[in-house]
Image (cartoon, rainbow over all chains, first blue to last red; front, side):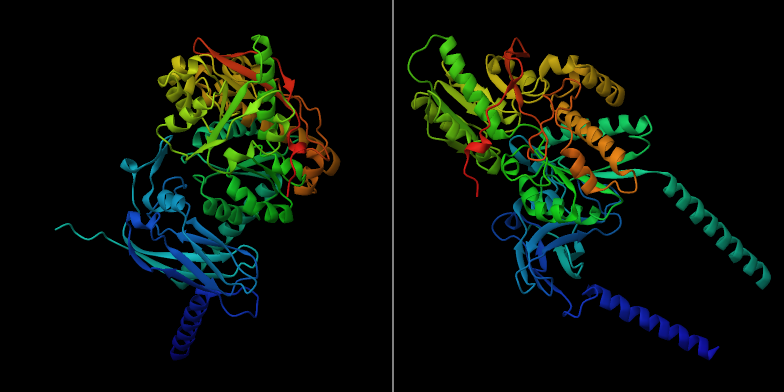
Length: 165
Length: 409
């Protein structure tokens, strides 16, 4: 009985370690694990993100000169306009890695409007009356190498807007 | 109790194995290829993309309802990218390894430019709107129709004829205004060179931001320059709104307004601003207006799959039908030569270069694809808004090859 418990514990620890490694994995490569940094990692969903201070994504450890896709991973129960109800990943930015596999990119205004504010578009432009902002909470963001399949995740926390006095 | 449990688990295992075997046999039986549409159903260019993709989808439904092409069905995956480049690229990454992905239909020029090298490496056919740059460098990109550049050239040719017909002397002055983005400038690459061979004067170019509410500034500048003709770019209702503003300024009385492939449609612009649009002309590579509604292929598929009166059909639906007919023709050839097992992007690439002259139920000119040609067709037609309808004022004619007149990078 004792042995079985130990085996189970070892298995659970092993699975935990594996799951931690999954967080930033360099698939089948001896290259250092990739990294992803979101700046700022905590923010209020406000119009400054559209043009003045868009979210920035940077990272290292991807294949030289490959496209890196930045996906927002939707938690269960959260959907966005334009995506099917069962879609769990939404591309929000892309970057071209340099010759060292490093990248830097900013979230484009159209992406912020479409996926964070979820506005409708009219012939005159975005219609803010229709916006349905993403609910405040912590979201997982994933950087994925187009060719290498190297993957890394980081947390983006969308905070509730400050209460009006 | 333990025996009971064991029997239960064995039973479950048996059922699971049986289900897996049955479903894998089912998959093996179903022969299909995948076509991915990176479209825009709710974003900035939905007015163009949504009806076009509806046409493609209805065409594929028609094929599948008849058992597929030689027994091979088409799985159509449509992603609403909302015109966002990142969403396009992410969606392609997700689906690039899908079962027999042979073709990707795209509407976003930025995403097309980013993905073309990867899709070419993946050996997937790319079908984007007709920017002539892809025609200048034939590769895996097959355009929906004649290049924007050629379409503008055809309109300029018509201007010269119209000027003569009206018995006017001297050279007509032509203005150009469009969105301040790659699409808005694409039409000029080659057509400006072509214009230099014609008896006309080109006014300084005008570009305005997408989403502009009032176009008076740009219109007034062209009017002050003495424009006799003004060509307006943008996807309907933008060109409609520009001409609406020109009408308010009284400019439509003395200036002939013209639009490109995505100019006023009978269900959008003409319906909303018929009075302002009266007399304006639009150049197109697919049937428009009442002619589109009376086309047997378009009306039968629209009423069958959309179950709505044909008067509600947006003319751009026919652009999608054109793509479906291209794929049907190419896939038939590819199956004949390679069979299902070897039916892949490479087989389709070969087949697309072999359907030169393919007819598509009269919705557009004959197919121009060949080993060296990536424009879907060469023929255009010009319509005029008359009494709330788009009425043809020319027959199909070959657009000038402006693409070949430009010095490309």
